[in-house]
Length: 163
Image (cartoon, rainbow, N blue to C red; front, top):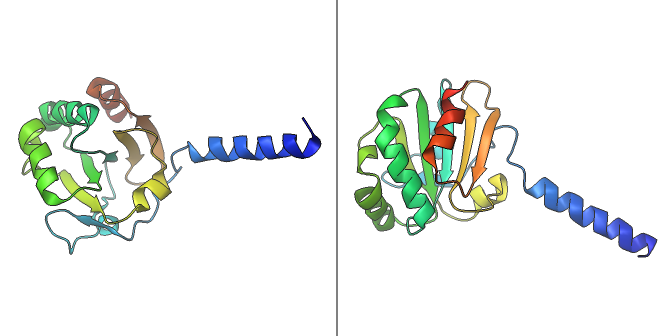
């Protein structure tokens, strides 16, 4: 391999590795709006205490459905956690997801559903798989842990409750 080829390879490898890491702090979001009230912006809804959990999901994804069902079953144990379910789908698909897989999340003050109008979440959070879950400390806005493609709620809950 030539010197230029080696340099290009390492630059590509570095860019790939860098792209696969969740942001160390919660980024600023400008175009993600609440599914049920488009006047509400995600950035303005972030709490300053407890934990923040972003779940990037697709309503038709089986793993996403499992995760929603698991969180729904455990939601009463997680009152200090704010869940932000973020999708690129319209309200009717979100409603179907909730009604079929996560009925226990309806009406919970610490659970909300959001639509990314473009690709802002993907660009800033760099998800690898559905569902992509990101746990942040709400006070410091620093990351605690992220999960890619994980539908086993017990693994995610362990990270939420361990700190």
